[in-house]
Image (cartoon, rainbow, N blue to C red; front, side, top):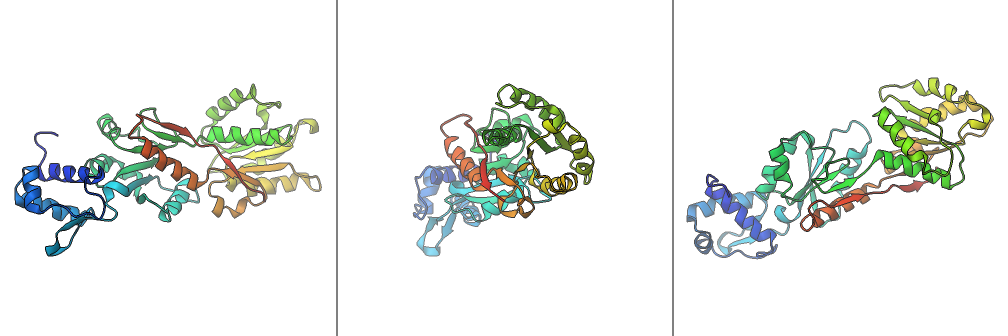
Length: 334
């Protein structure tokens, strides 16, 4: 502890650490306050103020003249901060938030926004939370804050440095899974429609897959649609379909299921009475994507994401930076 640390803050951490370590399990009664003050070498006034703060935080429960007990669900044992970016539509952040609100336990989630991450280290140091799960990057944080966070159970969902436990939800790995699924079901030429989040990276990653796939792949079959565009599918698909008949795709992999309606509409205009290619779409929210019904759907289940993240939190105490890659799964047939 730093010499200048206030007595009450140091005392708070020691009491919470004792609860988290099982010295006083949930529901157990604490020793008398005179005894606690003597054990911790603090004044009775400092102890009383600290206990009052822990009662206010939900760690302890005061029963008046009957003493003080550990709460049934103290935050230092069960409360996990779930830090999510802003989500303007039915995306992964919304899905995780809805799932966390009905999580069966034993961990409980406290929703936080990304701009509150700067205060996370303090909350973990003060045992106001057991740990944290973060969707997205924390590389923008000061290096000293990152070093501090590495001392606590913190799990990153997405791309991250190897310094933190992390759960990979790799868009490119997901595209590869979809490609292999279609090829394994007998498709010969697979076209890809994806939102243009990072065009050069997608092309480079797909080129790397080329040697591993059992079917020829042609970069002309990739359409990348800017997220702000609403009509570009109508313009690009005719160019795509200008390929010779024997080179046209017999299946289309769609990276975001909100792109299914414009792709379906464009195909209907182009093909008339001809049978359309098979559609496989990555679903952002399986339970909230009625637009994806014309396509077979796959993706990451939010229950699997949070379950794996909670498991990594438990492992973090024994492994410096466990890494786990979550594979997509087939969801339904529309």
